[in-house]
Image (cartoon, rainbow, N blue to C red):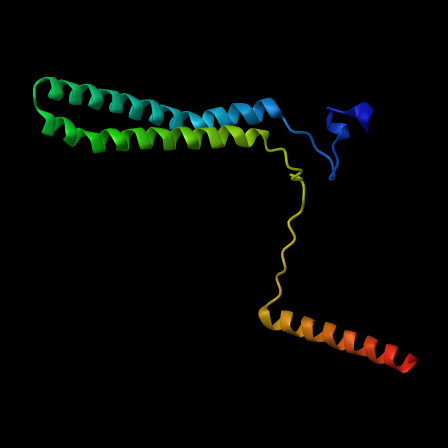
Amino acid sequence: MLGKRGTPDAETEHSWTVNFAERKRRAIEEATPNRREADAQRERAVTLREAAKTHRKAGQAAQAEALLPEIDAAETLARDAIAKAQNIEDAVYDLKAVNPREKKVTDARTPVQLLEAIAEKGREVEAALESLRSLL
């Protein structure tokens, strides 16, 4: 199989390749709105800081202080947006062996059917224990 590495012939239900460049491109694309939001919030924080500075110079300390919660909120939103973007981009490097071809197996039995299957297994265990006891 190594000689066929990188070709469709090399892939089976138990092996696959990962297009790392495509994963990275998609992650950057997905993270872009968060990065834009972070930039907008940082810009808002800078604008508010400048307004607070102007108020202080004009002797309007109360108005300047009133802007501080908004500045903190904008900075928090910027940090949160950057963290979201970074998490999306970092997920590209999470190369857990998750088989994309794995068939999902679901148990479609009803609760009553499950209880009966458990009871049947219990009877099998009891029969095996009786067989072992008879050997003693």
